Image 1 (cartoon, rainbow, N blue to C red):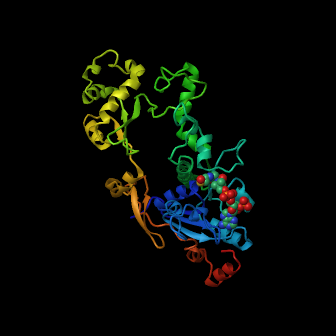
Image 2: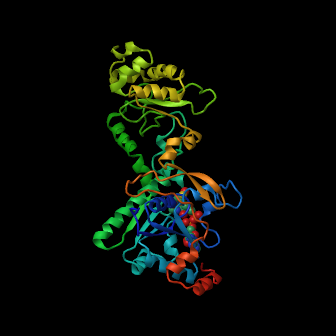
Length: 415
Ligand code: CAO
């Protein structure tokens, strides 16, 4: 069966997390992704957070599926020529080096364009043009600079970063969309273009609703869906909202049976207005359905703390899965707090390919997250990550190098 990006060749000059998540997605959609790594060392994540000595880490294997690996010393003059040959053969160059690194290597936009005017050059950087454009950036820096940290956590605590890698993997997703869009435009114009996804911008895009709230706060001085209303006070900036839902339907995380020993025995419970009467029935507070103090969303707002405490008295008598089963029968929106252990063992996620078991020649079997985007005409088959330089000879031969030339380049330390 064909794949959506069959025939697209990607020169993958990415490392660590943000760039590799982008090129992994493109590989899953069928692009031929050739990862160029530093000769002798490779992507630094190969050896970071290792759980087995001398074996590519899960950090690396889980971000680099379906790719080929070549090792080139791109600071060696002969290595540069190999990279030039690759630039001429590829459609997209993706990189997430520190600002200026590609230029310092001699591969400016102008140089790349001269080699291949159809080339799309896609970059992740920490910041866009401005005061911080030269800074190196990792995940949590982006979460802090993009507005996520200041709006996450509880009002009486410090800013908190999320476990979701919205700075790295989130920006990788943004970049992937930029690349396929540029590929589409190239079919009309015949020209490549630069694609930039700054991590601060990507995080801010995901925090869009918080900039909405900043403007509401400035206009009205309050926001009724925040836990600070009606008892607390609002400052000048959007506060941390704890586990409030952030939308028009109040929600909170509530204890379930077993919470004393299980840190994840909780459920997210939403008091959605249309099912209020059903909620009252389930928790045994039928009178709240008609009591003017509780019957409407506006009337409930000042009592939300008490309402959730009452609902929690009910959820604490059920496991999170029992509560889910009962609440779903009544269309009451809720969600169990799932641990990574529970997610890893969930059969339905295995069935859809969202969790996949992969075999690796030196690591053996391991679990990974498969392609979260399902295309009906372009199925994803998750293949193991490449060993360092595993495909150097193969790719060099495709570029037209003879075995003798390959051997000479290897002796010269260029590959
Ligand atoms: N051959 C020879 N040299 C190579 C090479 C190769 N195949 N591949 C890379 N290099 C060199 C580069 O030329 C560069 O050298 P110079 O510093 O002399 O120009 C260097 O390796 C790349 O280094 P870097 O500065 O990108 O790497 P770092 O480990 O110091 O910083 C990071 C890492 C992530 C902070 C930085 O790359 C960055 O800010 N990237 C953009 C933002 C980003 O993607 N962050 C998310 C990372 S995931 O958490």
